[in-house]
Amino acid sequence: MNKTKLSIGVFLVFLVGVFAGSLGMGMYLKHQMKRFEPGGHPPPERHGFIMKRLSRELDLTDAQRVEIEKIVKDSEAKFFAIRNQFMPEIEEIADQSFAAIKEKLNTDQQKKLERIEEKIRTRHAKAFINSITADNKPEQTLSRLKKHLNLTKEQITAIQPIIEKDHEALNNIVEKYREQHHPKTRFLLKEIRELRESTDKQLENFFTETQMKKYREIQQKTGKHRLGPID
Figure (cartoon, rainbow, N blue to C red):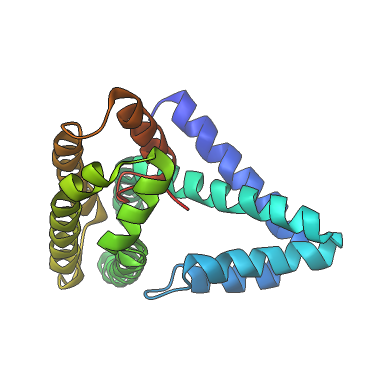
């Protein structure tokens, strides 16, 4: 991991710490834990919680709420995009850290640590899998693409089977890892990235150069595991 990636990580940790301190550490940690539980809160509920806290603490006007909520949604999308981008590096650091700690422990302590590690990894992986499938419907993707890329009826008709096939393939990948006892998110992301590259290549045949450029820009912001722009 280079210095740029490390700087991003440090900044995010600092930002989260400041935000948590401002709004109350207890409430923040409680809701953040629930947020990443398997089957955790969908985006509207997460946004609602954040806006409720900000409105109460800052006494926002209705106009301010509308504008700030847009910022909250955009920031969350960017956060998840960064998280997904650096997930392999994060898991590699975790592997190295647990391995280094084990070297300092006796046999019994190592077994206890392995059980803790297994529990943490499984819980995190399942929560991550659920975050991918939370909003995974072809008709919603088509609607977003039509809105943000100004697609014609002919383009919608042409890409519909591609979108439907992509969603079906994504669901199959996710279900495969969901059924695993100890799913590895780095391998999950690798398969999803390969699927996305294949789908994007097919869409290039029906999008104009301008539409494809816009599509890729939004994909970078929202994360490669999601097909199509955010609302």
